Length: 356
Image 1 (cartoon, rainbow, N blue to C red):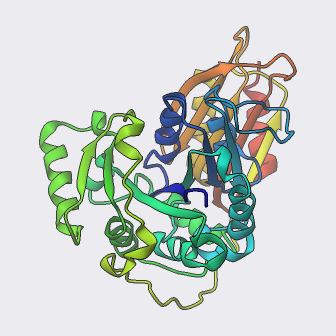
Image 2 (image 1 turned 180 degrees about the vertical axis):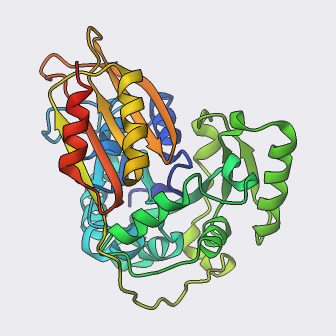
């Protein structure tokens, strides 16, 4: 019988840096054949596309590719709501497809949404269809160091709440502190991310706060923009599904809750190019005028062959060029907006006014 596929679950709040961490692993995968499951939110696959831009994917044509080549990987986007609440509807069939190809894979990474409870997802690995073919090698919880020291736990609380409300499949309404404790309680490693944004005293404070919440001895590793070796993040051999009793949760039993339909996501696709500074100023204005909690996407920049990645959480924006536009691509600007009662038409109109 073939060995079980080791699966690493990457959890943490919205904006903690999970996608950046995984992207770094893929760019430095040391020959591992990796499949990635992304618990995407929104109509455009921004996070999945950002991971594909690591340039170790075998193909971006949309056709299924073999994963037997060195450095090859598959990105699978799970779009049907929070993974911990939709494991049977979408996660199970996806895992069964990957299990069919387990001889061609070295490991699987699963990036959960910012509101996911790790335990229900891991319990799925006890199901007969999965348990003999895959095992949860370890759970990595990514924490925003700056947010912890400020006492907010997440970099933008409104954005996190927007993500909660906009997901009609989310069947748990969890206080932020309890969710934070659940994500830590399930961890085999805690990544204290974005340490570059705080001084040494604040980092020490964050470490102490996290250690107080950990129910058992778990290593905490500091990280600047997710730049950690895969050797640190993979290979725990923890078989987490077999010792869940050691990982207490506030949510071992869940009650169903209603959700506010005002929170939604919308996207704009524009064929115009933008000056990055001018576009960011326009987006900052939009955030002030509307309840926009999260912005993410790609931007076409005049006379620039590279694609610009833009991410905004609240008032904080991050920009970087990730890769050249492909020969078969038409440079365009694609942005996803998450917020409350968003006026999509107004967003598009104002952005067009700032286009080149």
